[in-house]
Image 1 (cartoon, rainbow, N blue to C red):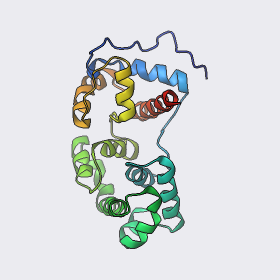
Image 2: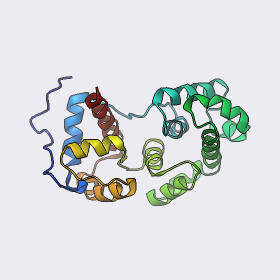
Image 3: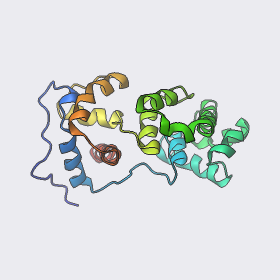
Image 4: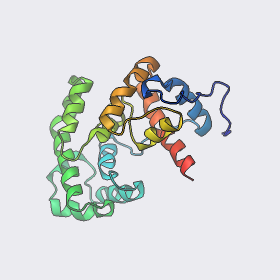
Length: 216
């Protein structure tokens, strides 16, 4: 895939622009041209595996999270019901590669217990209600809730992570420091772009890939 931008490359926003003024559809097209199709970008074969990975990668590297996922899978615990029944001490040893040995096992257990109670009923929840439930699970913050909502339950979301913050700032947008404010300010851009869920999932992956490229 050529590293050159297409003719309709997403132009940088004027300095001082709100994130809500960004053309997300043009940004998606530009980054897809540069990095190639990403598809359903987040790694994982099943929604629950993706969700556990989203919890494990918090304040960690993906390689560490992947090691913990592999350990859980090897013990037959990378499924909601078996993990929900597991002893915390056992889970602690398995997820140790991800760090935070006191918090991490509690958080993946809390996720597994919520999943066994509620995952089959999620279809009746609107996007806001699902996000509120996820935020009530121990250890799931706003970024993780959006990632799980998007990649596990197919709910529209723009993941307002550090990669997105850096990219938009580099293009002239004034991006708020807090996740909640960033999410609120980019809402008009999302409304205009009318990206499908699959496009939003790919856009997040493209933004991450762009961030990694710039960090080299």
